[in-house]
Amino acid sequence: MKWNVFFALFLVFCSFGAISAQTTIFSQLQTTFPAFANAVAQAGLQQELTTGSFTVFVPSNSTAPITIQQVRFSIVNGEININTIPDGTALETLLPNATIRVNNYTAQGIHQIFVNGQTIQSTKNATNGIIYVTPSPMPITFSTSALAFASSTLFQTFNYSGVLQNSNISALATAEGPVTFFMPTNDAFASLGPNFLSNLLLPENTLARNQIVALQTVPHNVLVGSLFPGSLVTTTALAGSQLSIQNNVITVQNTARQAPSTATIVSTNFFVSNGVIHTINAVLAPPGVNLEAIASATPAPTTGTTGTTGTTGTTGTTGTTGPSNDGSTLAVCTFLFSIISFALFAF
Image (cartoon, rainbow, N blue to C red; front, side, top):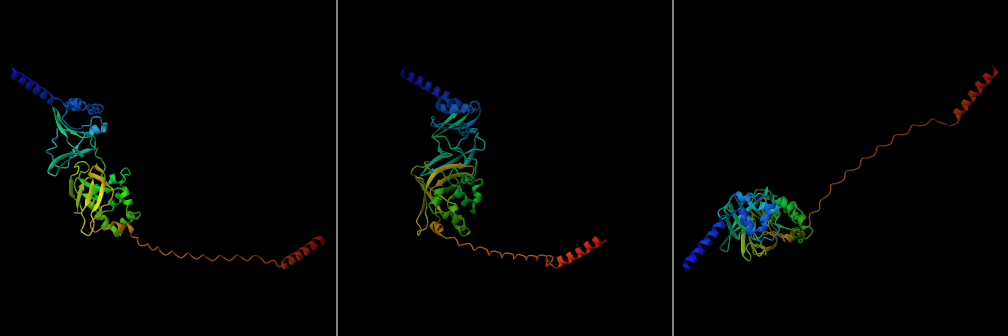
């Protein structure tokens, strides 16, 4: 009798699991993530997530505010197994011109998958697709390029945009990517003195400028921040130098005669159309480049051109000599007038 009871309970449990596994995406959202389900309904996607085939990335924090744009950005057409797709794959979302980038990383022997910088906490299968649970809402990938991002005044990196545009790898800032840019903030440039930026843009500093930009550019996606707390992540910059990232501090191992250059990552994982951007609080110094020397250099004075000699004014024309009036003419006229008057009176 006891075994019959256990067997009956086992059948009930299995039946419940089977029923649960056979529910649609939207039904599971209503049960487990009601706030997200309400946002889906407000976006007008309830029917799609009930009948269509989709992959949905849902934040586990159901109390976080979710916009309609975030809902559309969290949904991908078709059932996608992110464990089998190549590193760096971009998934088109229901938000126009916005993609989710999938990255596969191994750190200290642990393999993890990230979607726009978010880890996957759990997976839920549905009858019409799959649900991946992330810690928080994914940041929407900016539809602009890295150069447009840098040029914006919103992120306090527009000083670096001028350096980037005037380097020999400026094309990467608008190329397809993926590329990672470590962009110094405006305050990072200001900390090197008022003349550093203008001096760096001078023709004589072209080589140093190119080296600085190449050092702060990595030809693939590098996700940092809280993704690997306390762990060490190393990568190779475009310049060939090794970059070490640990606890949001990035270090460049320079030559033995030059101390390592370090910077703290201020903001992480800004996703743009051609890669990812992190802002840093210092300008990284490539081996052999002295940032202080560039800042303190006095530009050679520019010699002004000699002014042209003024045109000599033309000599004024001599005035026409007026008629003489020495009194003789008046006397003659008076004499003639007297004769004529006498003649007329005599006759």
